[in-house]
Length: 152
Image (tube, rainbow, N blue to C red; front, side, top):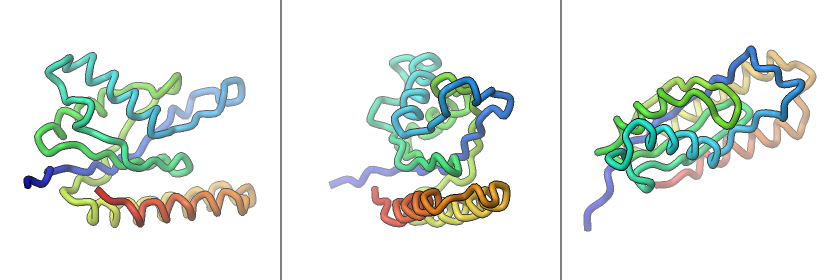
């Protein structure tokens, strides 16, 4: 039996700061939204010769810190990475992706994602101050627990 070789990309999603969120619906980054945006760019730029539907998967998304983990097959990860850099919007919100870590196994990816997520949440807490409710803290703890149990 042959093991599938994967690459894991820890990405940070930057939302457009000039977007007027008061008049529009709130921006929610989900696994479905990200996968759809990436898949659309793959089809536009690579067509049928691009990575297949099964060659990449959005494993984790944290809408509080805007961090995500994307798994791609080792053969196709460069095309997936190139497509991610070409994504200009998720839904109707302009976004930019920043690669924080690229690793070959889930353990190294988990460690990098935990470190980044904890640091970004500390920044979020210092900026938000008293607006950080116990519900948001509980949500964040749930997302951190979700990273800790990530598997292939």
